Amino acid sequence: MIARCVILTLCLGLASCTTAEPGTETAATTTTGATAPAEENPAMTTTPYRLLEKGGYGMAAQAADVGVTAPSIEIATSQAEYNALWRTHIGQGEPPPADFSKESVVFLLMGARSTGGYGVDPQAVKLEGGTAVVNAAMIRPGKGDMTTQAFTAPFAVIAIEKPQVQAAEWRDAAGHVVVEHRQ
Image (cartoon, rainbow, N blue to C red; front, side, top):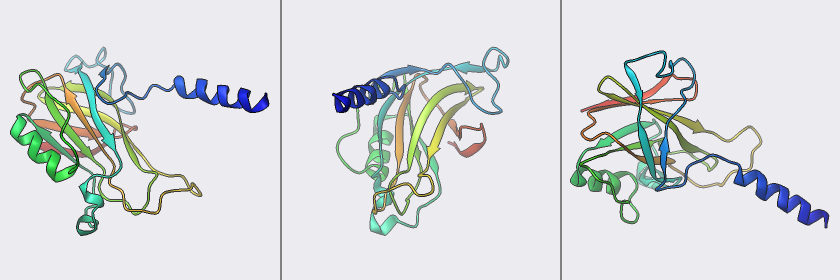
């Protein structure tokens, strides 16, 4: 009976998590750190986005690419760019569908890590002028955490409801710019 209560409690706790599943649309409603909410900064507007895919084993985890440890951000504004970026950075399977007449796709790539326990968690997207500002936490294992002993390359791929995005910034949970991309 006690084991059932523990399992039920764990299941209920997991059900209350708010992490978006791939393919679901998420309306970004909050900002973190130093970034001002849209109500206070009229130049910044909330933009809906969908999590297309997220994982830990992007191509940077391959033995030849283990030296790629810096985070990066890439933008696809056409199906051809999307397919090429998918093959280069994710490498496995087919990319989830995106409608480039309404969306742009952004790749958040953490780079190679020597163990598991790392991740990328998109939390909000805002438009600031012509730049898509993606707030995404960089998850790291804590001291003493058990981790997979394998090279990983965490990533998240999102579709932003804004076609032809030409610039993107990845900001961490504190609002600091991790990396930016300008086309």
